[in-house]
Picture: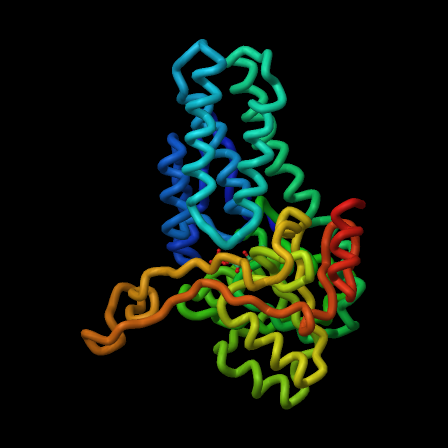
Length: 349
Ligand code: MRU
């Protein structure tokens, strides 16, 4: 990362500093959240987004919540902390990392029945910071494995933003692209703009440009045309939740890209940490899909583009069946088909 890069989320003093992604790429401003409610609001309004980053934000929100509980009584502390955990867990439904992070931090109070309140508060903060640190290390590992699937001089297509901004730093899909680019500076990236929130146009293009990786922005509906003309060598995207059989939820439109890649024999990879895998879901049919405000579709930059009175549907994610996925790049290696078997083994590694 060049020097001017700032990690998108960190614990600062007694607050959580969050780079406000709603105003990128034009302004780089940090929100200072001092309460779990402020972090929840930042998650819901997409000031911070991307499944792993939301998981990290959730963990840090719990550290804030733990510190705000004014009692010396461990039993009362546990009761109030568990309530905060419930609220944080509900901030966004699709990404698995949030529930995973909340459960991991909550286990501190479950596993330390004899601890004092002050000890629990310190351990909760330490666990949240560990989740943040591990997320970065995990992404670097994913980069190491994932760069092997990128052909020399590849023209890579990515969708949405699965970069440093969507994680604690470095990125999942963009982490793989960063690692591949270090070894092969001839590769280049097509970033889909990603309607309606434009994560590709605003965030992925911003990150790649800053990293010095050649990036060309395309409209989402030009993917088929580019693939049919042989202009894409490999697709690498992130994930929000992966079922036990490899079915994968990611940003709405990913499924469309995957089917096109399958049709044109372009390899299609998911890059995601194991914290995105939900082994409790047999297949993708059970993945909860967040429905967002229709105004995100009918309006652009605060201005209405659709006729008044016209409604819009705005599912934020779709599910790509495992059949269309060539491999899942994780921190323990690239998982191949049959996913039911390799995911189970990967989770045990
Ligand atoms: O709605 P968003 O911007 O949170 O959606 C983000 C994505 O779909 C990403 O691809 C996914 O979270 C993986 S990020 C490493």
